[in-house]
Length: 104
Length: 500
Image (cartoon, rainbow over the protein chains, first blue to last red):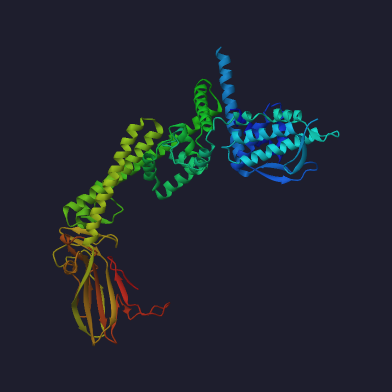
């Protein structure tokens, strides 16, 4: 469950613009989504292997070059699918929970 | 005092405490072990190392040069223990299998999104296109070519429906692994819950959608039922009553297929085959329309559905094979061509007049010709089949006489048979002095069957000879536009002559 959501979040972040892993982590942290850093690295690679993401190398002012990830067209399509599923899920959950309240 | 080592991490040199180096090294090794099955292992390690470099560099501000073990341990804690990397992945313990089965899509029927049998929805999943587009294409193809109907039911029968979660995943070309199966199950439960809640909760979006789909289904059903009814009526009329579109009549009445077929087929069995063949094909299509139409309106058990479609398919195939057998026999009966030519008469002179036989006149052979109506087709009177319209061709004579030849041609199963059929063709045309009285109707016995019998007159004209018809020269006649000699003429049943 959480993994699916994490994928959704990462794709959403990258849909707004390219970012390197630390930036992605910052976004997640800012949103107070507690994630063990380690989980996102295999995830990024897997998404890249699925051709949902791509990356390019960019020089940084200090330190090693950075790997900027960006979303592909496939990724955007997948994202909109996820978005739809998410909305459906959200709606379903709220329908169920509300009904529960009505019944109780 | 601590021993230090100098290392390169992602191309950046660092000085590590020995303990720090050992911690990092064992950490990275542990990661490799945990992620050993992960495709793109090196890239993951690379990302992790890049992150470590970044974090180490943050720690080295303020003049510090040596990376302490404490720092590395903090970084490791921040990034996560190796088990954290695999934590979420324990479910996909077989990532290699996942990759290989990933692209493998299978064609299943999607009964959850089905309007009828879910063939279109399955195709949509297979080709990853919106199902509405597939349905639209299918409907257009069906209405314009009319072939799709049967195809759909064949596909319905032979394509299995996606029943299990793994089949549903394969249908959409998704990897069959635990994670995806879980999500598939989740959406399934979700769907059931949603369905249950929409029962209680009127006016939800889902229900509006379901309602409109239902209305669409009902209108499609009614439409198909309408087509089926029209087909059924047409089929019955065609088979037993009066096919007005076949220009054949007997005693002024139109033929039914039942009466027409004996004129075509030699053997009784072939005529039976053709009759039942055409009948079965028509009725199976009608049945298809009815079952489909009713299915759109009302759900009934798939077992009944399978049985009825099986039955329909069987009668369709049976009908086609019966028709084919009759067709093959007919084709054999039409295999050879034969013609006979005989001289009707000769005439010495410069003017030959073509005159149409009077209408409604008693002709040789004792048959009365009812010559009303059009040129097309034929009619049957007593034991003879009458055809309307004869052709004439002109050519220069080799002597000083007009010669009139009558050429009868026919098909038959052998050359001898064709010749025999040709000989049976009769006409009442005859020459009286300078007047060639042409009957535009020729006939032959019913027993000869319809074998593409034709009758042509060949008239040879001497060098200064002319042929007249109703006060006009019809040969030699030069076509003003093409400057060609017109060497053919045609008498229609009304006695109208046209040159070509």
